[in-house]
Length: 130
Image (tube, rainbow, N blue to C red):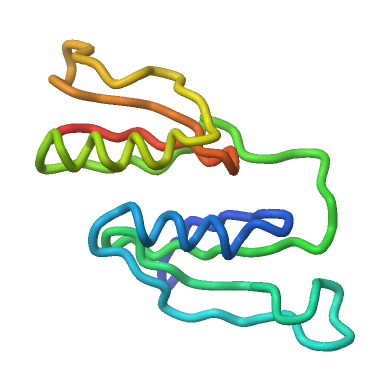
């Protein structure tokens, strides 16, 4: 086995999501992108499949041309350790726009500052002050 990679499937919002994640989480970038071509199932030039590095974690991002009866669930989340409270606050504030908190930023005893939220795409994030 070579490796295990998280795979996020969107329905038309892959480029918007990966751009948000790369702009919000420090040390993140788009590694490569494959776009739908003429005659393929998805809209021409829309992201088909991409690889992004989110703070060093390689994640695959896919735009499904097919509607599915399911989406993301908080039972699987991306966990981010931050070095400063300002970094945590910036990430949480940006990712929470259009989303919702499962646990708003607070001291929960196991961490002096922690938040758990779903972003506007439904992807779940746990953001912790390490």
